[in-house]
Length: 83
Image (spheres, rainbow, N blue to C red):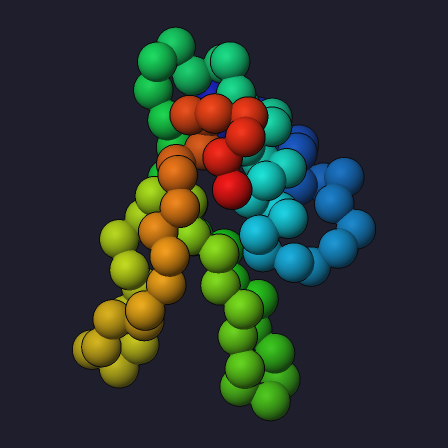
């Protein structure tokens, strides 16, 4: 049921910044996890092959069998101040 909250939190987002999307999703689930948390990775792919990635507790993503170096960040729902 908790994961059902996330699509609603995304429906109101007009921007495409992955970190901001994860922050919004975090605010939607803080206090609703019953002591649990949600891991997520959000990526914006650009037509020129660039990407912007934000990670909330997931393992590092892989590209062509190589890990992409990224800050892991806190999982969603752990703290309202998590960035």
